[in-house]
Length: 335
Ligand code: NAP
Image (cartoon, rainbow, N blue to C red):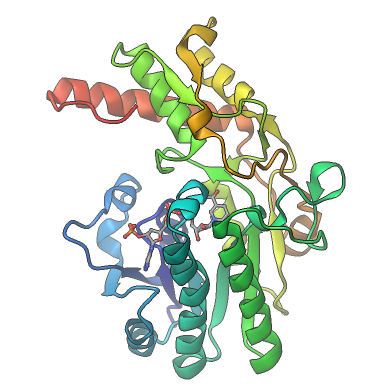
């Protein structure tokens, strides 16, 4: 029989890549979307999968809508990717972030417990839960958590409630502790896409400068297309377990900027970058680097796309998009 998956956050970056991956595996994919004046299907359209998904209305903060969605679909697998996913915004909207990222997960687990208790449940956990913890900046599944933002604190609640439902109700629930992962459809508020979109606009003469925060922050950046496969693999194991998904390599924001400018033929990039204190976080994270050996061993998973290739893929996609905007006469936005 055709397997079914219910994906929350389907309109986001990971939702779109995961939907594509599951459809290629012949899953019936249900996607939860929230009511809004205009639906944002660009990511799904970009990957050419928007018409193959069956959509259900719901919101993580509205338990009854989640109960209805699970009851209606009775999924074999549930992927909870929905979140207020931007760390910076979590200081501005800590209450909303907590409602969606923490209580929302409890709401969904309750819905699954009621109507699909045998479903396998994936929770989008995050490396942000570690804060600056970890020996020499390297994090494993056993590294103590020390979240440093309202986003990470809400995600930590979600992490533990998922573990608790596994232990209390014998449900198959896992946390994927994912390190940063990017793609051409990454939100423009995130530094990787902000840089690649900004560089494309500078190259095409629309902008002069990029405004950035701390160029020395280091991150472990992977490709979203690779990371969603690890999510699926976590739900195919004999026993539920939490896994780190990361590349194990770190790069500074400065390196990201250099690779992006070089891709468009600009070697002397410094005059184009303005260090803006407004973009510094109230509590900085300096280095995040994940040890993915457990995922390699149990899930037989490895990242395929490397840092330089990823940045170049994003720059190329942004150049195309901005050129299309210019050609269509639409007023270019962003930057
Ligand atoms: P994203 O592009 O920002 O997508 C977030 C999704 O959540 C969107 O589909 C959004 O819907 C939905 N959403 C937000 N609030 C909701 C609500 N109240 N009810 C229902 N849906 C809601 O995020 P992403 O990069 O794909 O990340 C996916 C998940 O992985 C998130 O939980 C994120 O926190 C986590 N994560 C991401 C990374 C990363 O590097 N990308 C790393 C670790 C963990 P709308 O389209 O309606 O806004």
